[in-house]
Length: 409
Ligand code: ASP
Ligand code: MG
Image (cartoon, rainbow, N blue to C red; front, side, top):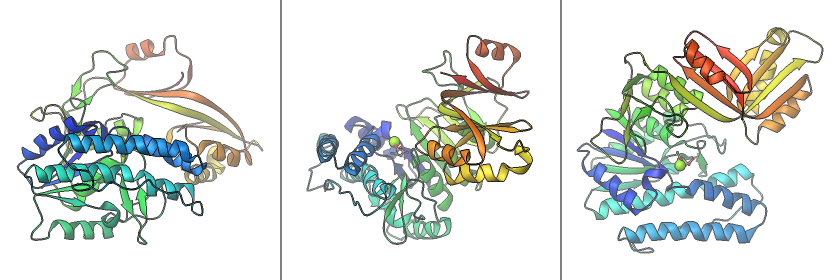
């Protein structure tokens, strides 16, 4: 069996869904198809939750109607009859007795529920034996809403049992990004988490391979929107892939690699528009990457700490500092230290300010927002000179092959 994952851009409209069907129809194998929400649905649902939380019913309703309209439109273009072939959800409600994050997960998960229903019914109507799976009942997680941790053992058991059923159709369509708690609430795994779901499915079902279908020819050495003359990397190792994903390369979610590496399952990244193209493959072995790789991670905050009592931060306070960082769910992209200071670069998020306030209790804290982290793997003296020129560099970390520059936007 194989796992195919299709992101939001690949299923953003009826044409995308038809193309998905072509790819699925040509696969030959039994398929687990993992799908994200259509287009920018998740962003729209986030706005909806935000509006509901502030009792702004009008904005919420407008968002919902626009969203519903585009899903109904897509379904109809695919020849499906709303309310007969597909039952769309009602406008979600916000439970003000529960946390924001709890509400977020109950509502934002509707994007994947809707997209998978449309795709599953369409495949079935196109003559492909297909089954729709409801992941909140199958992928068991804890109740860390918006960043739920998967219970690997329970999920593997349940999902394997479902897959190994004697009369299972050849194709299963399942939501990426969402799961559920033991007491029946929906959870989400963190933004862009569908790749991770696909990797977990590959791991649980001992897939021959996992393929992520994207609107790129494969894994490139840089973002073509930012750098001219990009080249495709045909083959890379799990190790390189993790480093790339962690540095901020948008191709795959950083959590995707581990479940696959653990079972030596190759991960293909292939262009959605041309299913015969080879794309890129991530596997245990590959030649060293022989082009410099540029990765931009934007919206960074550089936080520098110094102990108020001038103690040696590194020796005495590291655990304390990183506990605070961890508790506040900050995503660290770089660490640098001197005798009495430590600097960490983190992704900007709603968690940053509370963390800073907490750190201020014991440290002198200075921070800068509006930064980008440029990682260059396979760097050289010339490249470094060129990239530093004319830029306001706040911090740099340079080893023989890799350079990390924190740059003021
Ligand atoms: N739909 C979710 C998001 O946009 C998950 C995903 O696309 O992977 O974050
Ligand atoms: Mg998405």
